[in-house]
Image 1 (cartoon, one colour):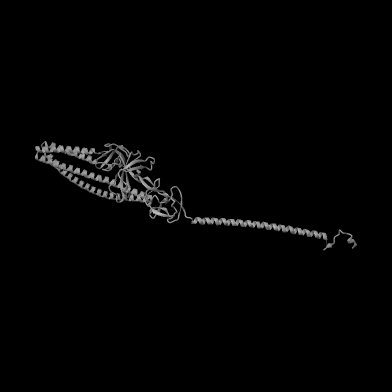
Image 2 (image 1 turned 90 degrees about the vertical axis):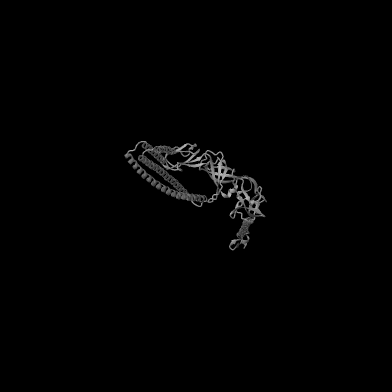
Amino acid sequence: MSQRLGCPEEVLLHNGLPIAEQLGAAAAMRLDRAGVSVQAHGLRQRTHRWARRQWSWRVGVWGLAALIGAVLVWQSYRPPAVSIVQPTLAPIIESLATTGRVSGTTETLVGAPAASIVDRLLVHAGDRVRAGERLAVLKNEVAEAQVAQAQAALNTARAQLAQVLRAPLRSEIDATAERVRQARAQLAQQHTAVAQAEHAVAQARAQLNQLEAEQELAVRQHERSAQLAARGFIAKFELYQAQIALRVAEAKVRAQHQTLAMAQGNVQAGQAGVEAAHANVQAQEAGLRTLQSGARPEDSQVVRERVAEAEQALQVARQQAANAIVTAPFAGIVTAINTEVKQTVGTQGVLKLVSHDMEIRVDVDESNLAELSVGQDVTLSSSTFRDQPFGGTVAKIAAAVDEARGTVAVTVVPLAPPDWLRPGQTVNVNIITHPAAKRLLVPATALIRVGDRSGVLVVEHGQARPKTVVTRPSTAQGVPVLAGLTVHDRVITNAQGIEAGYTVRVRETGREGK
């Protein structure tokens, strides 16, 4: 006891540890607990701030989505906006657009007076010729045969005259009688040849009638195929087949014309032969009578007259043979050569001649007949020579309408035609029907279909209302309206997608209504 009291710095043990150590440990534990408490408090504060930020972001996103949805709903229920315009009354040039075929004012097929063979061709396709210019030289066998027969008849007449002027011998009488018999037999043969030739002509004419009927059928089929092809109802190959069939039919008709001409030439030659044979029989019989009865003054005069007649016949035959030279009946352009050298031709077989003066022939639908009149101005152009348009005038309107096609033929005379204009050429034709017509004009975008007719939508009391209109072809200024609108109508220009009866909003632009 005295020892423990004498050591004041000595601390008593508690649970086997000094008191000071126990107090330090307790203080340290209190400090640790305080630090943990502070850390937990800071963590709770940070967690609370993050949660608040997350909530604010979500609220913003939800609010934006709600705003977008509200805008979309508002747009979906809002009437569509349209642009409108009031029709304007303006003078325009109205024309009837179509196509036409260039031809000469006079066209003809230059042929031979009778069936002949081409000996020489003196011109080519595209040559310009003068009236009376030689075009071809023919070899006319019929005319040459007639010359030969006339020469033979003249020789016979002269021989008869010589016999009349001298006393006959018995042998001469017998020889003359034999010649009479032979002349009669020759006359019978000529009659038979003429009958056969006439039969051949009848057959050729019947065949020609059949071929012309086939050609007419081919023409109608080609026209129908052309119309169907233009509308896209048939393939171009079918149109090509129709064109080939038409060309074949035309070639057959031309060939049959030549065959008919040859057959008719044979008939003419046979008839000439009959006449010559008959004259020969008469001459031989007269000669026999003269020999048998002796020459009389009047017989001698008859024979002399027969000689004069034979000389005249020979002159006529030679003149006909001279017609083998084909000449131009008028000045023009040779557009086609229909034959070749050494070929047989008839009255329509040598070449086609077109006059220098041109005209354009147009087929116009009969529904436009009321707008046509002689003297109207015409603008002509070519798809090939686009930058060289030229003018013309309506010179003639056909007196009748083509019943099969429903068209009327209009003839246009070009004024100062260009050098490139050729017969057979297709040109664009614009007939000026009204040079300064006052029409209401609307934009092309305003047109819609109302049933099977053209129409527009107009704004009436805030709604789109349809109106049927009658229009003309569009111009650079707009689409002319003949009926169905007034200048006070408010026409929707962006009519696509707008249905009749829609409630619409008008977008103000230019002259547009309110």
